[in-house]
Image (tube, rainbow, N blue to C red; front, side, top):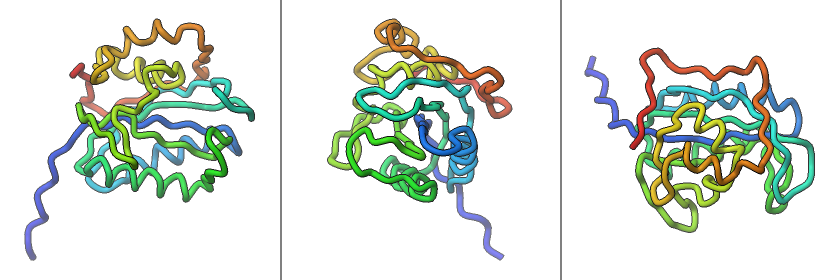
Length: 182
Protein backbone atom coordinates (compact mmCIF):
# COMPACT_ATOMS: atom_id res chain seq x y z
CA UNK A 1 0.00 0.00 0.00
CA UNK A 2 1.42 3.38 -0.97
CA UNK A 3 1.45 6.27 1.49
CA UNK A 4 -1.20 8.98 1.10
CA UNK A 5 -0.13 11.95 -0.99
CA UNK A 6 1.06 14.97 0.98
CA UNK A 7 -1.65 17.53 1.72
CA UNK A 8 -1.64 20.63 -0.43
CA UNK A 9 -0.47 23.91 1.07
CA UNK A 10 -3.43 25.63 2.68
CA UNK A 11 -4.61 29.17 2.08
CA UNK A 12 -7.16 31.10 4.14
CA UNK A 13 -10.34 31.83 2.21
CA UNK A 14 -13.41 33.75 3.27
CA UNK A 15 -16.82 32.88 1.84
CA UNK A 16 -19.97 35.01 2.03
CA UNK A 17 -23.20 33.01 2.30
CA UNK A 18 -26.67 34.36 1.63
CA UNK A 19 -30.18 33.09 0.90
CA UNK A 20 -33.64 34.64 0.70
CA UNK A 21 -35.80 31.90 -0.84
CA UNK A 22 -37.04 28.71 0.81
CA UNK A 23 -35.88 27.52 4.24
CA UNK A 24 -32.93 29.90 4.40
CA UNK A 25 -31.62 28.78 7.78
CA UNK A 26 -31.57 25.10 6.76
CA UNK A 27 -29.97 26.03 3.44
CA UNK A 28 -27.17 27.96 5.13
CA UNK A 29 -26.57 25.10 7.58
CA UNK A 30 -26.35 22.69 4.63
CA UNK A 31 -24.01 25.07 2.81
CA UNK A 32 -21.68 25.22 5.83
CA UNK A 33 -21.63 21.41 5.87
CA UNK A 34 -20.86 21.32 2.14
CA UNK A 35 -18.01 23.80 2.61
CA UNK A 36 -16.58 21.66 5.42
CA UNK A 37 -16.68 18.62 3.11
CA UNK A 38 -14.74 20.22 0.23
CA UNK A 39 -11.54 18.39 -0.73
CA UNK A 40 -8.30 19.70 0.78
CA UNK A 41 -10.35 22.13 2.87
CA UNK A 42 -11.10 22.72 6.52
CA UNK A 43 -13.91 24.90 7.85
CA UNK A 44 -12.12 26.97 10.50
CA UNK A 45 -15.07 29.07 11.67
CA UNK A 46 -18.57 30.19 10.83
CA UNK A 47 -20.19 33.44 11.83
CA UNK A 48 -23.58 33.96 13.35
CA UNK A 49 -26.49 34.46 10.97
CA UNK A 50 -27.57 37.99 10.09
CA UNK A 51 -30.86 39.23 8.63
CA UNK A 52 -30.70 42.01 6.04
CA UNK A 53 -33.00 43.60 3.50
CA UNK A 54 -32.11 43.06 -0.17
CA UNK A 55 -29.87 45.75 -1.68
CA UNK A 56 -30.73 47.00 -5.17
CA UNK A 57 -33.39 44.28 -5.47
CA UNK A 58 -36.79 43.13 -4.27
CA UNK A 59 -37.81 39.94 -2.51
CA UNK A 60 -37.77 38.70 1.07
CA UNK A 61 -35.04 39.53 3.59
CA UNK A 62 -31.79 37.61 3.38
CA UNK A 63 -30.01 35.49 5.93
CA UNK A 64 -26.27 36.06 5.58
CA UNK A 65 -23.14 34.65 7.16
CA UNK A 66 -19.42 34.22 6.54
CA UNK A 67 -17.27 31.08 6.56
CA UNK A 68 -13.52 31.00 7.15
CA UNK A 69 -11.82 28.15 5.33
CA UNK A 70 -8.28 26.86 5.03
CA UNK A 71 -8.02 25.26 1.62
CA UNK A 72 -5.54 23.57 -0.66
CA UNK A 73 -7.76 24.36 -3.63
CA UNK A 74 -6.67 27.24 -5.81
CA UNK A 75 -9.04 30.20 -6.08
CA UNK A 76 -10.58 29.10 -9.39
CA UNK A 77 -11.07 25.50 -8.17
CA UNK A 78 -12.72 26.83 -5.02
CA UNK A 79 -15.02 29.08 -7.05
CA UNK A 80 -16.07 26.10 -9.20
CA UNK A 81 -16.95 24.15 -6.04
CA UNK A 82 -18.96 27.11 -4.71
CA UNK A 83 -20.97 27.26 -7.94
CA UNK A 84 -21.59 23.50 -7.76
CA UNK A 85 -22.91 23.82 -4.17
CA UNK A 86 -25.20 26.66 -5.29
CA UNK A 87 -26.47 24.49 -8.14
CA UNK A 88 -27.27 21.61 -5.79
CA UNK A 89 -29.44 24.05 -3.85
CA UNK A 90 -31.39 25.17 -6.90
CA UNK A 91 -29.58 28.46 -7.55
CA UNK A 92 -30.77 30.12 -10.72
CA UNK A 93 -29.42 33.32 -12.26
CA UNK A 94 -32.35 34.82 -14.24
CA UNK A 95 -31.09 38.40 -13.77
CA UNK A 96 -28.71 40.48 -11.67
CA UNK A 97 -29.69 40.62 -7.97
CA UNK A 98 -32.51 38.09 -8.42
CA UNK A 99 -33.76 36.44 -5.22
CA UNK A 100 -31.82 33.23 -4.59
CA UNK A 101 -31.96 29.93 -2.77
CA UNK A 102 -28.22 30.18 -2.08
CA UNK A 103 -25.45 32.61 -2.90
CA UNK A 104 -21.82 31.75 -2.14
CA UNK A 105 -19.31 34.50 -2.81
CA UNK A 106 -15.56 34.03 -2.65
CA UNK A 107 -14.68 37.19 -0.72
CA UNK A 108 -10.97 36.74 -0.06
CA UNK A 109 -8.36 34.14 -0.92
CA UNK A 110 -5.33 34.93 1.20
CA UNK A 111 -3.91 38.23 -0.01
CA UNK A 112 -4.66 37.39 -3.66
CA UNK A 113 -5.63 40.20 -5.97
CA UNK A 114 -7.20 38.67 -9.09
CA UNK A 115 -9.13 40.40 -11.84
CA UNK A 116 -10.34 38.00 -14.54
CA UNK A 117 -13.72 37.69 -16.26
CA UNK A 118 -14.52 34.73 -13.97
CA UNK A 119 -13.17 35.99 -10.66
CA UNK A 120 -12.34 39.27 -8.95
CA UNK A 121 -10.56 39.20 -5.59
CA UNK A 122 -11.02 40.73 -3.18
CA UNK A 123 -14.72 40.62 -3.94
CA UNK A 124 -15.37 44.02 -5.56
CA UNK A 125 -18.26 45.06 -3.28
CA UNK A 126 -17.37 43.45 0.04
CA UNK A 127 -16.13 46.73 1.55
CA UNK A 128 -19.51 48.38 0.78
CA UNK A 129 -21.82 45.70 2.23
CA UNK A 130 -22.71 45.57 5.92
CA UNK A 131 -24.16 42.07 5.43
CA UNK A 132 -20.62 40.91 4.60
CA UNK A 133 -18.58 43.11 6.92
CA UNK A 134 -20.62 42.46 10.10
CA UNK A 135 -20.20 38.66 10.04
CA UNK A 136 -16.61 39.01 8.79
CA UNK A 137 -15.85 41.36 11.70
CA UNK A 138 -17.34 38.81 14.11
CA UNK A 139 -14.70 36.30 12.99
CA UNK A 140 -11.72 38.51 12.16
CA UNK A 141 -12.02 42.25 12.92
CA UNK A 142 -8.29 42.82 12.34
CA UNK A 143 -8.32 41.09 8.95
CA UNK A 144 -6.97 43.38 6.25
CA UNK A 145 -8.74 43.61 2.89
CA UNK A 146 -6.05 44.18 0.24
CA UNK A 147 -6.32 47.74 -1.05
CA UNK A 148 -9.17 48.63 1.37
CA UNK A 149 -8.04 48.35 5.00
CA UNK A 150 -9.06 46.51 8.15
CA UNK A 151 -12.53 44.97 8.39
CA UNK A 152 -13.28 46.73 11.69
CA UNK A 153 -12.41 50.10 10.16
CA UNK A 154 -14.56 49.48 7.06
CA UNK A 155 -17.67 48.83 9.18
CA UNK A 156 -18.10 52.53 9.96
CA UNK A 157 -18.60 53.24 6.25
CA UNK A 158 -21.68 50.99 6.13
CA UNK A 159 -23.19 51.99 9.48
CA UNK A 160 -26.44 53.18 7.82
CA UNK A 161 -27.15 49.70 6.38
CA UNK A 162 -29.32 47.77 8.87
CA UNK A 163 -28.00 44.35 9.85
CA UNK A 164 -29.64 42.23 12.55
CA UNK A 165 -27.73 39.39 14.21
CA UNK A 166 -30.10 36.43 14.67
CA UNK A 167 -30.40 35.37 18.30
CA UNK A 168 -29.33 31.81 18.93
CA UNK A 169 -27.12 31.60 15.84
CA UNK A 170 -23.77 31.98 17.56
CA UNK A 171 -20.78 31.56 15.30
CA UNK A 172 -18.46 28.61 15.84
CA UNK A 173 -14.73 28.10 15.49
CA UNK A 174 -12.81 24.90 15.03
CA UNK A 175 -10.68 24.03 18.06
CA UNK A 176 -7.43 25.98 17.97
CA UNK A 177 -8.64 28.51 15.38
CA UNK A 178 -7.64 32.10 15.86
CA UNK A 179 -8.13 34.62 13.09
CA UNK A 180 -5.17 36.82 12.37
CA UNK A 181 -4.85 40.05 10.49
CA UNK A 182 -2.84 39.87 7.32
